[in-house]
Image (cartoon, rainbow over all chains, first blue to last red; front, side, top):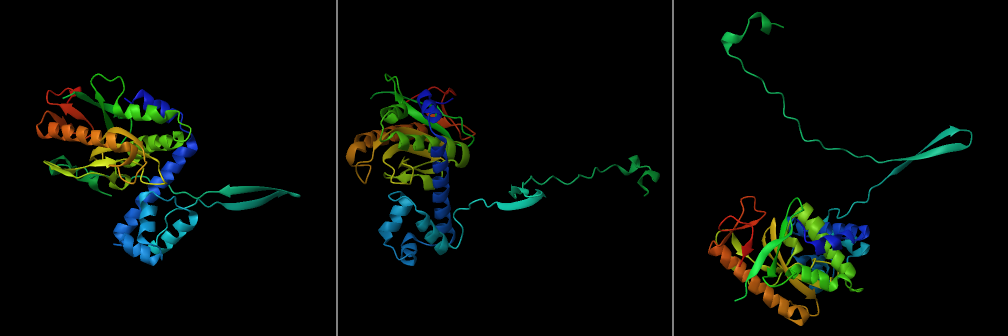
Length: 135
Length: 172
């Protein structure tokens, strides 16, 4: 069940808005997570970035939008990537004469949940034929 | 004291369910009133869509109500059995965001949304949202009291409220 008003607003929401929210919300969690993991306070981060603590608070509490430069600085200080842009390596192959085709390949790895190993079905010794176990 | 209904707002997401409150004599819930108020506002339409996407996709369907997404706005109220509940400002914690939507986050899987408004002051207690903030606190207190008094309880899957008779129609 979903409120009809809410459903209407979601249906009218452009795709780029969804993408923006997706990126921003993930960035926010990522930055806070790295600060916690590395035990860095916002004050310490401000000192490292040579910014005032209030400016850092504004970054992390929503008063300022992130810019690519601010993200790069944050990433450098935190020592971990904050965003990743998919990279495609162009591959060109000559078909014949002067024509050629250019392909792009994207490497991806699909993670499948590990399959449980085959369980051994134990049998009563009395059920076993001695010959059936040979080999 | 006026009675209000605690009713479902959105349970379509895989991770988190949203409830809202509606005065018994009102046709719209408090959260619907908030969305209708800004739906056709040329300046605030986009932030409103961002908030809707944030609620339904990011919180509801993907991550749940993580603490990093909320701005705590009021004195915490300690309650048994699961600790501390807070009235929080679901203002999307980013991007010079011009709207506030108040909520009571029960857990990462259960949130009650109230009304909200435009941010015209640094704190929830000031500016245009002051009145709805007071009202949000009042709704929260009554919901939490109902939980303490066992008039309502949280379902075993942590995704729904139930009244003491097991019904999902809840009047407080």
